[in-house]
Image (cartoon, rainbow, N blue to C red; front, side, top):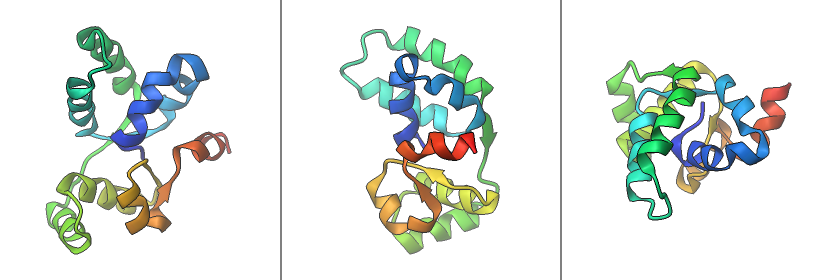
Length: 128
């Protein structure tokens, strides 16, 4: 599973390094597209957000999607670990799915080391 902090840089550089081939093999949360849209909304470097998001929509539609099905567990994860509800959802779904969470969020990496994977190590894991 990949969160927005890792997905956004992949999408930005995908045309130059082959990330595009990797993306359909990854899983995102149902909320990832909204988080991604929010990042684009506030990224001052983005020139044509509408065009960018339209092209990314095709990619996002090709990716596997998960959703948090147990709001109580998400809440408990978030409150116990002092993270946002969004981050709690990513963590809870990754745990429930028994998969690694690919993230660049230092707080999540620190608090959930056993559950996370650095984006730079992703290509090696997916190709196995």
